[in-house]
Length: 156
Image 1 (cartoon, rainbow, N blue to C red):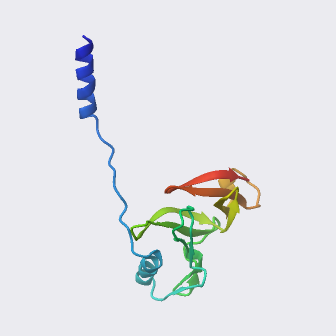
Image 2 (spheres, rainbow, N blue to C red; image 1 turned 90 degrees about the vertical axis):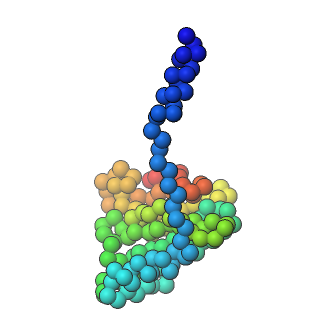
Image 3 (cartoon, rainbow, N blue to C red; image 1 turned 180 degrees about the vertical axis):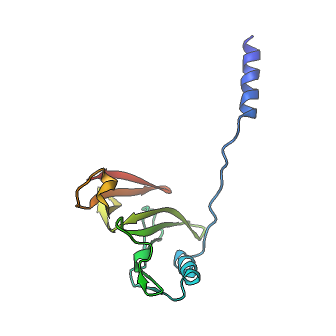
């Protein structure tokens, strides 16, 4: 009887639907990629000095990139996708073989990139609702990049 159960369990595993895994395609350079996107979206696209920051966001010794769409001027409008929640920021990791992939996008006011307990972390200023608050003071969310994920360390 236990052999029949074992065989049925194996058959069930074979018939179970497998999750669809897809690998994100690498891009050559996030600055070129994103600027090209907005140059197609806008009649005229201008990019401020703070449009891209090149920093090692996951502490692996390889320079990554953060794009601040608040530094975009599209058809005369600064930060067209910015709102009361802040502006879109896109976070890209560079792989050692070359190329980048996006790990996150966040709607934030700004961030500081500081060393805390030996690791570089983001302290993001965000709308207070992201900290489950209704006051007007910005939420300060501390986030560390581990592997290819952003991990929230604290919110206040």
